[in-house]
Amino acid sequence: MRTSNPIFSRWGATRDAGPAGAHQREPMGATVGGSPAGDYRTNPYASPAGTGLRAGSTAVTMDDVIVRTATTLGTVALTAVLSWLLLPVDEANIGRSYGLAVGAALVAFVLSLVQSFRRTPSPALILGYAAFEGVFLGVFSSTVSTYIAPGVVVQAVLGTFAVSAGVLIAYRMRWIRVTQRFAGFVAAAATGFLLLLVADSLFSAFGAGNGLGFHSGGLGFAFGVIGILLGAAFLALDLKQVEDAVAYGAPRQEAWLAAFGLTLTLVWIYLEVARVLSLFNNEN
Image 1 (cartoon, one colour):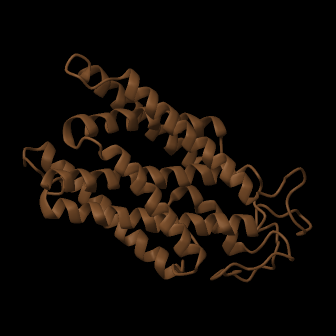
Image 2 (cartoon, one colour):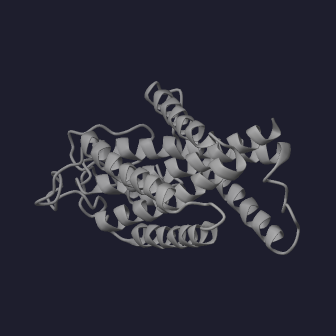
Image 3 (cartoon, helix red, strand yellow):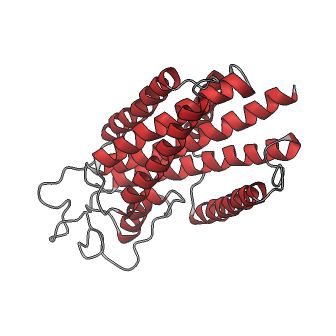
């Protein structure tokens, strides 16, 4: 099962190849692709004898994923709070704060791309991404709270927790079935969503005022809700990939990759929840 989150693509390939050990279960919807389970030619985590991990590797556990995800999200939260406090968006400092926030966002984007194309996870890159992303989120949140909708940041954080908890419960109860069809639908929907965002930005940049209208009114609210639903779908795909990585005995270092992917998804959800709540508060 491949997720729309590019960070987990290698786990999808491993899952299709077969488990790292014959004693492990085959996750829902897995396909072996004609190769025997644990075949090191198709499973990069299997030993040459096909009996498990390569020499010196330790299998990832759910605790590993939780600890590293908490570390990454904690870095985001810490730098967000610091940038809120140290980069005020008042009239005297707004230009400097916005400039630093945009620069931090660009650096975070570059670091995320570098990590995405690496064959192995780098904790330094991942935590660096988290730190710079936090700087951007801190200034963004301060701006929203100061000029757009006071108090909405706390609501957005609580909303992100609510969405995440809802997806986790639905996934654990198997109310959400993560299948190939589900993944394909999410990929198609995300592609359309991103293309509309690009078109909206281009229209705004070339003098179309409010662009395609995704920043206000009923259309903006609906677009934000779709963004939240897409984020929830990404999270379900990410949870499936983490579950499969643990079941198939991926190396312990892959927990950092899980933390990276989950952080990307949660940041997406937070931004979309903040957008919807800001529009809702402005309308009222």
